[in-house]
Image 1 (cartoon, rainbow, N blue to C red):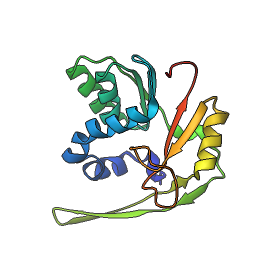
Image 2: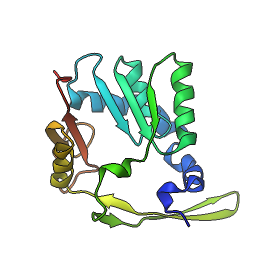
Image 3: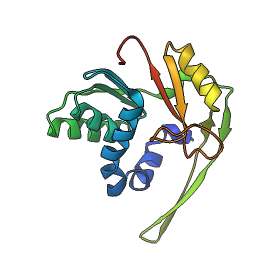
Length: 177
């Protein structure tokens, strides 16, 4: 049996939960927050790792950034390409697994979802790597990123115990303002 992250049936089943219409529509507002944190020059290059159907990649490209979106899921990337093409945007979408960027001996958690649709029950289990802000910052610096800053949400609140997520802003090269 394939691990969850390599199982296309898993991603197909989870798609409606991960990307409902309201979450897709939220990409514009979320992108506002991300771009506020980035302080990039117009036309800067952005990597959207694990881009899924491209909701953020498309929005960033629509705003004039040079975007590369990477995801291992071919179906999600096809939707992203179709979205970009429909808006006349040039985005490089790469089918690639982000696990190449991490070591194998990290800390993990094992979530479980139970999805019931049309009376049919489906259980999804997978493992997710957990990073502390310090570990993630060190990982990014080791990949050549500079000026790494971490936040607790997309509005730039400090990272701490009450953080809703770990947001890292890092620059590579001289693309930032």
